[in-house]
Length: 150
Image (cartoon, rainbow, N blue to C red; front, top):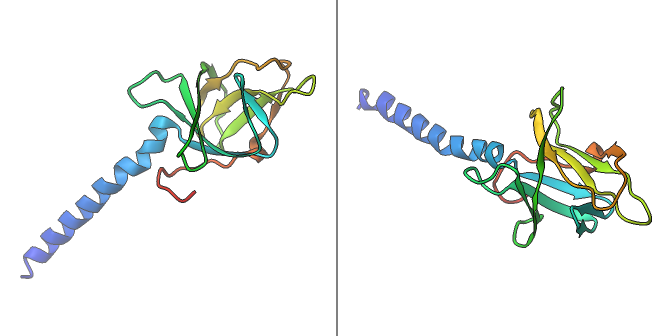
């Protein structure tokens, strides 16, 4: 029995590690991010009222520029938008959202979205707002887990 214990322990550890790896990498592929907005925002013509939302890429094998927006628990699909690739020199450890300046009583429009640690991000068309951007890092809550309960 003593000879089997190390083998069983090694197999159990290997199985546990293989189960965790796909879950940990899932968000890196789809860039799943939970955002919390304190005021209405415009994402390429779709106005999101204050609340929490999930933004993620369409899929790992799909177009890496297609962004989907869902409600916080991902039970209601809200919009699909096509973003342009953009680049920043210094990545941060937080999700970074920047907005076009709001004009004429319209909500601010999402300008860019960068996933934590990434230099490459997504740029969105203005929803009729000026091109001046402002940071909204304080309004976001990134998530690194694809499991429920966020």
